Length: 382
Figure 1 (spheres, one colour):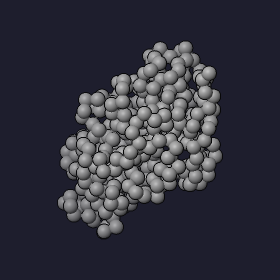
Figure 2 (figure 1 turned 135 degrees about the horizontal axis):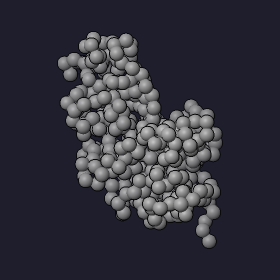
Figure 3 (figure 1 turned 180 degrees about the vertical axis):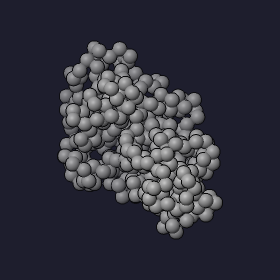
Figure 4 (figure 1 turned 60 degrees about the vertical axis):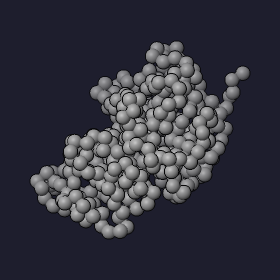
């Protein structure tokens, strides 16, 4: 008899998660699949709920960066089969509404009544349990599940997808310079994506030495804002303002506006009067994920450089605490709910890896707000 329960990482209260027994997911619609989760990442936006800064209620299972093996299929699923290896965007979309038809899958109107957009394991984003669990239900599976090569190769790369979008909507062009504020996973991925796309110079601003060391390893210029004004440091090193700017910490609007070269070449502008416009929105993951997958398969991108720790499910409580406190080099954590992968600390190994992380982060997750055409904000990572 199939088991009726599974283990999952559930929110208990501010600064508390717990691995608990929960009901196994079931097929609820002919278009559903059940995926046995091989890897789920802890995202900085999970910390928003973990810290009690949202309306998340106890019992919610976290996890919107998920991949695994198809275990069960609804009768309406035609493009997948049992045993297929798949990765899911953080977006849940039906592929049928007007927004989906226009490629705006982050704003699907058919999956979360009264709201445009749905996601796994996130407050107010629909009834979709997260993937920091042994199994996950994937609705509209033919549309939402991206098929991967069989086996375990590139596992840590495919699960990480989250910074390409910000550089894309900033209006970035090859040869331009860019400043990224915040060197958490998404910030590092944004910096890495700019490198992949031919940036002339990439500056990365943070205060955590381990993060700045990773930025340097992928060819960026690290800027420690505790050692002087970040804007002054960048302008001095660059010989002037940069062409684009990315905020991956949602804390640096004034600095970003000052460090960027405005449309009319005004200097050190601290407001929006120089022709910048403000726009917000999550990443439409399906616009990029197939291309990013193929870059990883071709060996041209390896986003797993950002991963610092890989753990078993029962280590999640400690991992959340250390990631939240930025202790012991916790930069990006991958959970393997069903085992099968070595649980190890790779904080030393990831520093020496090639800087191709940007691609994989997009297969999964990127929530953004932007100042176009020159300034980009990512609201999902701290």
